Length: 141
Length: 141
Length: 141
Length: 141
Image 1 (spheres, rainbow over the protein chains, first blue to last red):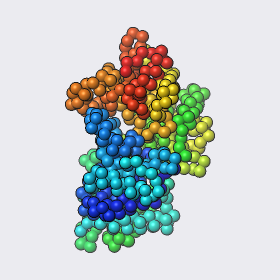
Image 2: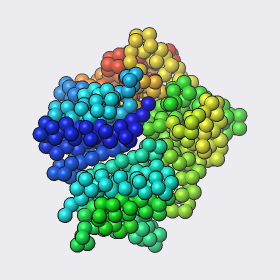
Image 3: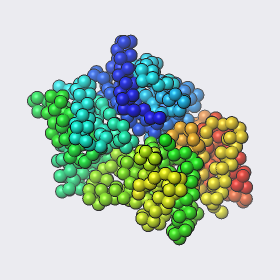
Image 4: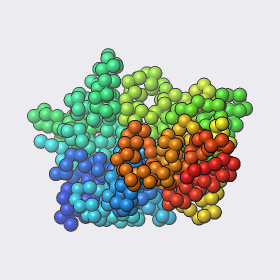
């Protein structure tokens, strides 16, 4: 099973709605497929111009490692040289903090990841989870 | 004046609609702001996974050079070493063919670019122009 | 549908057998999934040490562009600056010649690609196609 | 003496068998030659898509430095700036943790390395050592 573009659009729409509901700063939301390739992205008005790379980096690390941002952050705290090295082999594209959330299908298989950036990392993750839930998929943040 | 996210979404929606109307292959559409940074992107179901880099590269070259894809292609035909060198200074991120379309405001200022990929380069450009027109902005393909 | 490791191993085994049967030089065979990520690889004794990058590059370009090596080569002959630019956006990882073969499932969806290198490009492609056929999948070379 | 492809395949087969026997998560196994070039690789079904880069990085650091992952980790703990600098000169390709295991011939010469990833670093190393032993070679983990 793959994330469709319609599902990706639903995820982005609902993550942004969650941000508005919670009064968060402008969010940027990236949805990647199971191979780590970009499906869809939106950056809200008022967000800093470089936010795509951050949103992408949160989602990319999650899907390539099969590990959400919270787990990557724990590993980075315990073994900073390990996550630095991981970034080396992935071309510097990994942002190991919350806001990178795995997307699983009904059988539990990872089918992609969502990266959200703009507010605190925990709020970013909450918005990502809300988006994934709205698409009736399971998120692991 | 800047392209808003709502305008970027309109551009993508209308470019995709044009593709469906013309019976084109699945399209991928990127919208960049005046600084060459990503605002929004969508990849249609059935498109190859690497399409973001192509769509982005068409739009990025257009906005960074202030020159649409058609003009870049003419320059590449006449002076291939020039466009190769341009790609050197832009980190290899430029795809110099039609489908990279400048977006101008009412005063003629470049406020961003749209990159479309998936069908022939000329059809890609036609879809980009239709998207920009739907947002009531001026496109130069 | 995804290529399983067992299928990837069958593809490699049968591609190598085809090479032996045709008396080809030592082959190297890479199998990538639908997202362009490596599933399996083997380099035969006597092959040059750098063959992984060639085999990977043939398969990677095919899956990321949704275009087999033969079609990439035709495009490179017609528009060399285009394939050079494509390589820029894909980090220099594309080898646009025969031997990069798309793998499709029964419904025609691209589920990965095989890259073979070691002999002539056409013989490399023949070995890849034999491998894919042995796994009861459809190849497009 | 060089690792043959048959030996590399035996290493991978036995490392995977060890993983199954111990109930480990899906493993990915890379075998590199004495020059640091890839001989063979397999990623088990269910492993995250980016596992090749991690498995390769564990083996690559081991063979290029002549130092197994456990020794690299000790050095990274003591002098993080040293391993960061090592990664600079090796193009960011080194993952300095257990699971990168040197392969030695009967005379003690390094003839390659094995990188395993998927479970804990120590379990990864145990699987690599089991694989190397099955090929009747000596491993240093």
